[in-house]
Amino acid sequence: MGKFIDFTYRPGLRAIKTSVAIFLCLLVGSIFWFSNPFYSIIPTILCIQPTYMQSKFMGIHRVAGTAIAGIFSLLTLEIMNIIPIDDIKLLRIFIIPIAGFLIIIICNYLRLKSSVITASITFIVIIFTSSIDDHSALNHVIYRSIDTLIGVGIGLIVNKYFFRKKSLEQLKKYKKLDSEDLEDM
Image (cartoon, rainbow, N blue to C red; front, side, top):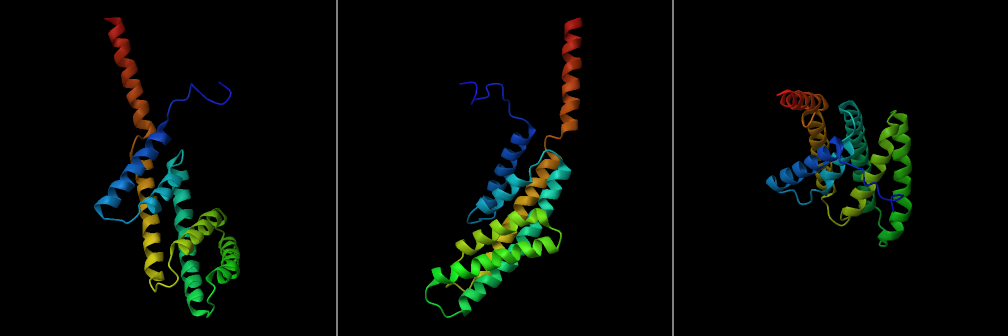
């Protein structure tokens, strides 16, 4: 049973920071009445990395990927509204893969290779959560982009200012000194 379960695991800072960031996304979402905090929680989870610099790198690529996905989503939704084909499934079969291919090309041309996955997934999420009949494609794209920015922002703030390693190391030194002092008495 020890082969599949690690009984020695203890949650680290990253697990704690991720939980705090998720809590803050839910709190911000409930205060500002976001319809679904799902879209801010995902980027915040992805932004919590072992170091702040890694989080910043992830955040930058998450925002860049979301911007590219937003542009392509809006264009794709508008094209799907314009083309007079009644069978939307047939239309999706041809347009979505072409747009996905173009997203990959654009990310690579812009030297944003780390944004390819984010841009592709965000594009798919926006396309399949939008109503093509609805003329609010721009609003949908804007809201998803804002949600992502909120999630990235919360992830970066939590990783930079909450439970910093240096603070914890100082606390450990303090506890160690305190316990040694008690033993000497």
